[in-house]
Every structure is written in structure tokens, then in C-alpha cells.
Length: 63
Image 1 (cartoon, one colour):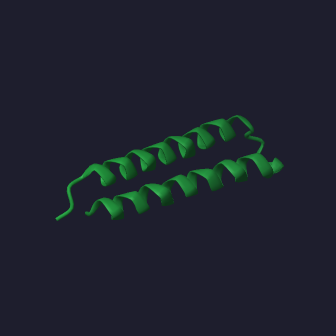
Image 2 (image 1 turned 120 degrees about the vertical axis):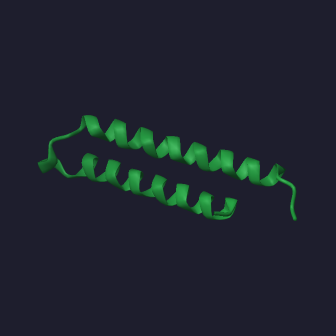
């Protein structure tokens, strides 16, 4: 798998985690406000990983 494909995979995962955090925050019938922090934190973690992949991709030799 190329670095670009890995980057998009991580971004998609971060988006899914962010959507789950929003669902837990905005749907009162679920009654799980504590999980907003868990899923939101996971989304932030995956976004940071995407940033690392971008930085590595810029430093990697082309060819």
C-alpha cells in the first residue's frame, strides 16, 4: 500500500470516529455523554497520525 493510500485510510478512520463522537453527543436517547470524549479523542489521535504520514511523505525520497 502506498503512503498516499495509507493517508486516506487514516483520514477516513478519523472521520468515522468524529461522526461517532458527534452521534454520541447529539443523540440524547443514547445516554452516553462520556463516550464523546473517547470517540473524539480517537478522532484527534487519527488526525495526528495523518499529519505524521504527511510529514513522512514529504521527507521520503521520490522515485
